[in-house]
View 1 (tube, helix red, strand yellow):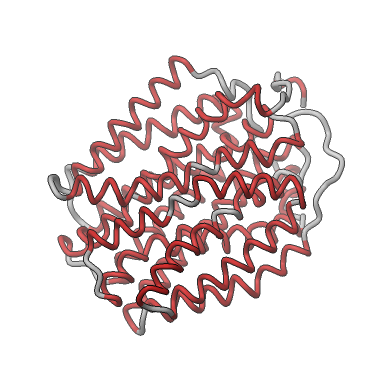
View 2: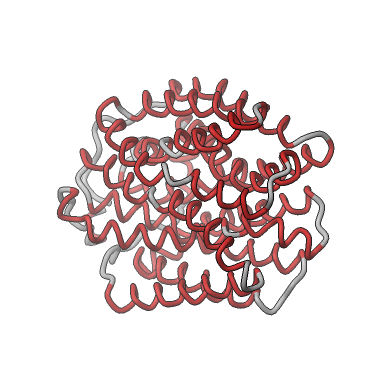
Amino acid sequence: MMDKSCPTPEPFKAMVGNILFLTLLFFVAFISRYIFSPLMPVIKDELALTHGQAGSVFLFGSIGALVASVCSGFVSSRLTHRGTLILSTFLVGVTLLALTSRSSLWAVRVAMLVLGMAAGLGLPSNIATITALVNRQDWGKALAVQQLAPPLSLVLGPLLAVALLAIFSWQIVLACLGVFALVVSFVFLRFGKTGDFLGDAPSLSLAKAILSRKSFWVMIILFAFGMGGQVGIYAMLPLYLVTEHGMAGEFANTLLGLSQISGLFMTFFAGWMTDRIGEKRAIFSVLLASGIATILLGTLSGAWLVFVVFLQPALIVCYFPAGFAALSRIVQPNMRSLASAWAPPMAFLLGGGLFPTALGYVGQSYTFGLGISIAGCIIVLGSALVFLLTLLEKLEEGC
């Protein structure tokens, strides 16, 4: 596969600037979807949505991510990973600006579908580029930096909503993010050279090689637990705090944003832990601990609830550096971009789409707390699946 002009892997310190730029692109794709969580109480009231309809918005985003991820190899094999990342970020900006002229449930659903497609195109190229740029022994640290994007998005999203909703409509908040995404895409087009190598288009032989691996399907389930515990909970937490615990919307969003700050440094701890104890032990420890915290999130109240609101995201964010490092070791490098293109979006359909939708309908029929506690039990029990993983010890050269 060396005819693809793969970059020569270098030490982490030499690639920090490039990794930070890739992290910015991931941040744009992530916050564009999860800004809807802190905005959801306002959108729900303005559009007269039920809890179930509010949760379904995130399902459309996960469907879009899955559909685009299946096709991402065709795009990156023609545009290169760099071109795919530019297209993804540009699509985010255009979609957010287009939504400002529409105010209906279906307009929001369609926007989330397209935003999910943009993310589905970009994430596989992001992961493939980082793991091609950096030496194998530094993957944990490099992916820890890249995984700053989700917690940073989850911190800034609620705080941005609190600041701007006091002055502007939710449509203007989305317009500001849309303009930012367009600026980032043009800056990367002008100055970014990272990822200037071709991806691998899906083929029957590669698909069979990946889909026949038990570890591939185990990773989908593990990622579903990680995504459900992070973004699935996050998506519906404002509604949970407002409707079942009587918090004001501004206070709930402020609490939500501040609770995610820990993720900005816990990812570095997770990267260090992954490099020290290995991917499998790190994944098991994180899912077990965060599952217990999720159960408590659905059962406690008062000051203890506030404490767990801060604890749970600090634990679950540690899954992703270990998870993506493990995903990069279940196949050889020539299949890595396809594995990264297929596994996270399939998992996201479960953890980031069906999960908040189910929480919405459980909250509508029973209580949000019950749904959150059940999810925590599933994560605790499912953490043992990590020991079914088979990780490759000898990786071939290439990207």
